[in-house]
Length: 164
Image (cartoon, rainbow, N blue to C red):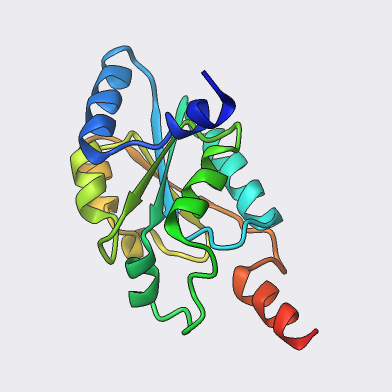
């Protein structure tokens, strides 16, 4: 198996990932879920994902599809990288166990299908603002808020590049 095939194997369909999560939880593993656009990978993303991984045994990262990013009004130039590129880059991180691309505005339906043990978002959110928090909490899981590394954002990087 080539390295690209190994990395591609970390990218799941919804049905495949539901089965994987059920197996992991059956064997007592703690499944962690987070999501984002991850348009230009930077230190803030890497730090955040490493901290998310520390919350359990198996880290799932849901990446917004291109159309989903456009609906988030992040600007006309976004996403900068296409969804396949973003998913492959995230899958290449050793702390990430699974990647899934979702097209909805929020990952609520995906979280409801997977029912992870831990839902992670940045501390710039309040628990009640996080899509799927109710599903996770109703099933005895936890919502973790992670402090973000200040000064790092895709928007700031994009602005710096345009001003150069």
